[in-house]
Image (cartoon, rainbow, N blue to C red; front, side, top):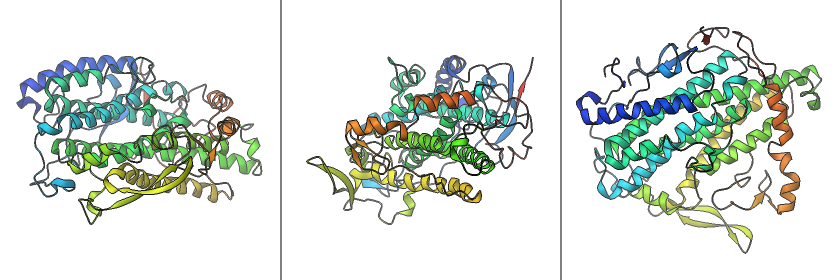
Length: 473
């Protein structure tokens, strides 16, 4: 890889002049999209202390420097190839991984890549207004780091589309820049990525829960028999970890500050808002919202597409190597079902239940983060605890879509749901209050908004009061 290339890469782009020209034609379109839909108000005058991937090796993927975001060097990086890699699951178990796209799997592979690719610019669009309400320069820099890496993940998917799918792939690459999060006419493909991220509590929950779904999707695609897709997603995972770190530690810091206020007020939760903090019920409501929205991203509980992807080697299980049996052809899985309006359960072929298999693992992973948040509450001597709502709560995809449940998973009538909804999900008043807290940004190095505690340490060994974002005249 030559880092001085127009498009930094480790795929020998210069050796394929046709592909290089196609991507260089796409590059200005990407920049037009970034300037229109990237972080508003921070495009040119600000230099940000960002991590930039300049190669895929240990020394090169995490290079830190000040950069204006439009000048960020988005590149194309794949993990190093695995010699003689074999397909690790499904009906093609043990056969050679694919260096090219088999014709019979062209359409489903393209669909998988486009769907993953569409989430990357969508999240940038959802978060584009948050800079004007940042709680600190540390947090502002983390927001921008997430944004530019989502932009690089878009590049990763567009590279695959251009390289392996011809004219169709180029058209799909253009369409990724044409859809808009929340747009009524051209929305993003997945509904969760059309939801507004209007405040920093939303942002931290999004990066905790929605980016964690992204981790699971990337891990499943990293098992793919299509070797270029596997290598691309494996490299993306090195960056995705930071996004989840931002979310989990962001919520932990909010919880810590809330605990401090409650202790100052002798544990009276109702006084938290009077002191300019974010009360635990409001934190729980946002947790309920983004956890349930993220559960939808796994798809329906029973899916013939999931079974087909697995059987044909397109998309595997998360951490496939931990399983003893890699064909999963004779196994069954127990899922919920409705029988005459009553909930029961049934056994379905395991492959058809793979969305639910991944959702189960995802819930376990999310629970670990909530346990760590609750340790903060315990540390401050409070009996309150945060929790994950039941998987049936507030679902709009799959078995539970169109049916209302409370956070414990009990079925409700429409009237009961409407009566209780604002107790479980952010209300209009909650949103107004959070927005009132975040009406002014904090740009002084080392200073934090009143509603969030400082982090334990800074970025890349820098102190917390480091000038992570510079404004230059």
